[in-house]
Length: 302
Image 1 (cartoon, rainbow, N blue to C red):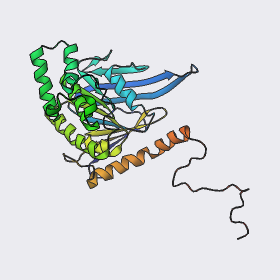
Image 2 (tube, rainbow, N blue to C red; image 1 turned 180 degrees about the horizontal axis):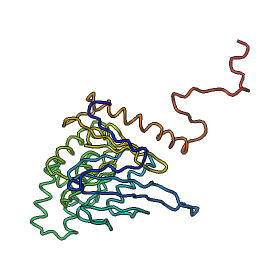
Image 3 (cartoon, rainbow, N blue to C red; image 1 turned 180 degrees about the vertical axis):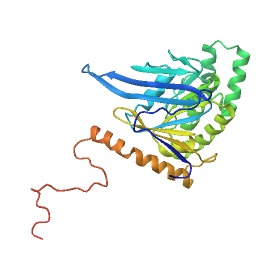
């Protein structure tokens, strides 16, 4: 076992239990199926049990099709489980609520509005008093270091700046829970690393509960208190890892890299499973030798 790694074996279904006093989100036996174009039911997520602690930064990591975004949407109330229950502070999730906000990979800012107006928008919808709303917008734009760009429009910003504006918009309604679906996945590594540091600082200052989806094990170790590794086709919990490393962390730190390598190895078979389903018959894992058929005659006559 590596420094900083506490693991829970989840080969058989087992919740990531915390004490009742600490738990804010609880998924019990939550599964999700979809009907495909041919009318057949397809399981996207096998029954899972997950607890999220109040103020925790919990990461979900896994390959395409593992159900990580499905879990996020279910907690957000944007979709309903096929079976099982989801509760927040003991109350069943029946739809979206002001205690939760979602930040996606795309900033989805309104191009005709300024940065200030984009961040103000959800407060106008919620009919927050004008003075309070403007004070909140200023607070969060300063928090993400965009105050001097408040009159800029999205096309005038870099990708990282647009995501910081989207983060300010997510925070301005002051939700208890922040749900983040690969928010830095489209950014270059250097910009993403800067935003990791900013996000960690904001998380410490605001004490939000964060549920963060990523396909990147190193990003998960860099940010998370715990990491839930998900298997795929259908989605399921494979492993739960507590990241007992001091903060702030750097993605290049030895212990971060080592623990990320463990998670990456855990995901290797799952990624190969996805590739076998999604690519043609000529694909094989890189380390797998190419074995010619008996009729190829390679090397004959040498």
